[in-house]
View (tube, rainbow, N blue to C red):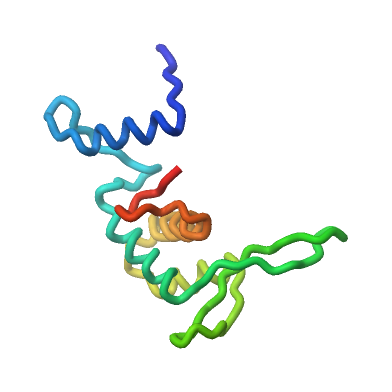
Amino acid sequence: MANIIITESQEALLLNTLLNDNTPETTIKVTTDEFPIEDLSDKILSVKKYLDKYFKKGNIDQIKDGKPAKLEVALMMSDNGKILKTLTDKQLFDQVQTDFKNILPEKDRDKFLKDVITKWFYNKINDSGTFSV
């Protein structure tokens, strides 16, 4: 068996080509882990829209192991733009999980939401609802 090494940029080009070419010999089902891309882009965008509307990304200074460190947090925002609460990643996940409890079956939902929250925090969700590299 031969191994093929594909770089991240080659992977993006390959996926784009395969997704945009619908001839029978090149049609394949592309997935990210166990989730089909085509089935989740609308769900990814709905979670992203929710996160963009109600939360901002931020950092707070703290001391970790006796050294200065930054803690990444989400800031819950009011409708008039005031900070209501500072949330850790776990607290943000719990909030999103509560609000999107029916987005996917329970066995898939948690991993999906963790992936979307992580990608949202690092601006890795593109306009079509897929994760960028």
